[in-house]
Length: 212
Image (cartoon, rainbow, N blue to C red; front, side, top):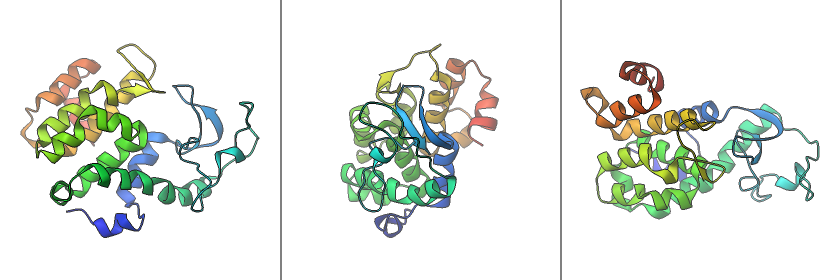
């Protein structure tokens, strides 16, 4: 079960940190992501670098005229910032789920929601219906929403479609996030089969590679 006390202190489990770091990658200077959003570190944007609670301000890295200040971020700095930056995303999850729903989630399921919120934002999470499904105890529906909802299939605020840049990466990331909510051991989860077909990959590759 979830160690809620750990999250209440802003802690980030190594497994969650590894997931976020693997999904986002590290870049030490401001760059534009696939959606055109200026980003630095482990996917840190202006929304993450608030200038509060020990977090540097985005203005340190980005000028008002839309150009970089030239300031860089080391991997060590990004590692130290991750826990502080992730904390609000965990708090948002807690605000939209009932206490009972949270108590019934496994740690892996909760971590997946935090990772999804970090990438998509709480508005898209709410609009997708994933919170309602979890509050209703319908984890199978939550899995399908994570994989298939247009609200969780966006880059730079815009929905991506097959053939668009980044589409396969987003779909693969959503598939990994949905795994803790699915009974994958049965080998007959229609969500996985549908995703394999949509990505043009053998189902075995989905199991062996994407969910490794």
